[in-house]
Image 1 (spheres, rainbow, N blue to C red):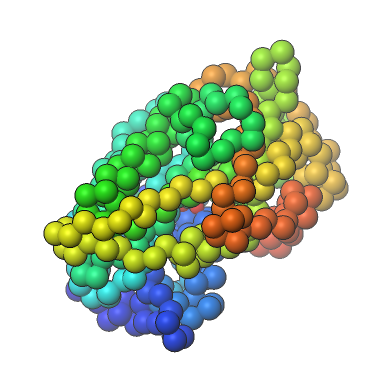
Image 2 (cartoon, helix red, strand yellow):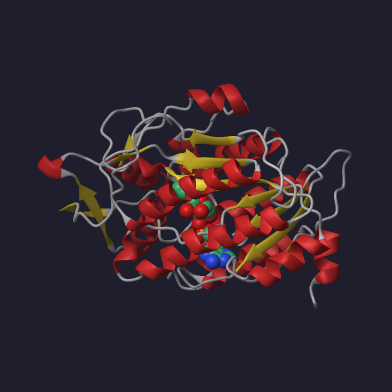
Length: 358
Ligand code: NAD
């Protein structure tokens, strides 16, 4: 295959006892940051991404160029491609898979339901099958989502809270993923860790997310639509800065142990973990907007609209004591500081390199 040599080189471990990690969704927001962090500490990293056009493809290409400049190779392919995955595991004996490829976003599901099933359910199963058949079997860390808490109204959200009332198809596919990974752990001894990320933001972020699209609109003098809950209650999110999320991902890989099955023949002890990765200090959306206004030195034109009931939940708030205890996870960046870093990146890079503001 044309990429075999590059994959081998990219997957090469550069420190003693380092990992060799396959990062799926590597051209995505979180995938880019995690790949860079792992490479920096000497792990071998190979990326995989299908470069779908859910949002600005040029941003994904720019992230890819950034990764390539750090000697990280990205295979262009789909996690549903079983033959390609088998070949990848043949070329590199991955110790870990960081599975971040997914169809993200909650509202897009109204028009594109099958894209969630394709990437988040079928893609996950194809990847788990490849891990099961690989020798050695890699430990898996993957991105679930805070959205699994759905209409849960007990705050803060703890891992043991009920997750049986998803508010969007996106949330339902992530919840399904948690149950699917459990069976692969139970039957085949795969080590699996699911991470429930809470609204991740920062440089190289996703243009479909509110903080990003608000920044773009404010700079263009266009109005922004700010959703509110019933009775004009502000929505709130437990915004979590990308560097904190990366630390949580790396901590998960470091404690993931080994898969204990062998080609699907032996059963291993249960190592199926789920952790919240949040900031544990929710901020209302209007407050987030006023922080952006401050950093941009511009006023937003706000349209306050009642939340249309198409997948959003009124608030999120993570209890992170489990991740703190087991992963040493300790978020340090508050929204005020994190958005400053985002705005600096946006103005110095995105606003201009993408030409006229989009
Ligand atoms: P992203 O969309 O930027 O990254 C996902 C990447 O996966 C994209 O580059 C996309 O091209 C790729 N991809 C999608 N389907 C694929 C497929 N079938 N095969 C190969 N590649 C595919 O999203 P992100 O914000 O970086 O999110 C990373 C993970 O974290 C996702 O699983 C997402 O659901 C989850 N998550 C993110 C947030 C957040 O706030 N950013 C919150 C909760 C959970």
